Image (cartoon, rainbow, N blue to C red; front, side):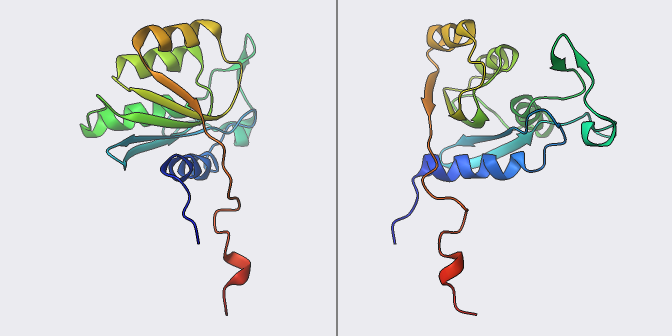
Length: 155
């Protein structure tokens, strides 16, 4: 049996995280990794204790749900909350980061952004990543569902 690559492994983690999303418009997951170890994860949803989009619908202003904190921001804020350094880390995101998340990723010292799906890839975000020396790479998931041997296991 061949193992999945590290990039596929961490991207699969981000896909699991996105399953916790409470936004009805787009579910996104993000995993921050340093030295092949997950240091934080996030998904897009409402502030802690707040109303969720799945309960009352999205709160849309100018085409964006303002109730939702993006997955990348939630993962970065988790690091900040618990005192975990992000300098030199990598982030795996199910969708290409928005412009605001791009700036936060750069400021946090993240060196690589791995994403699974293109999503409104803003040209300025791409320019900012390039100018900051942040590597961008698209990651395909070759094995899905998560356990390719699920239907081969003996009961």
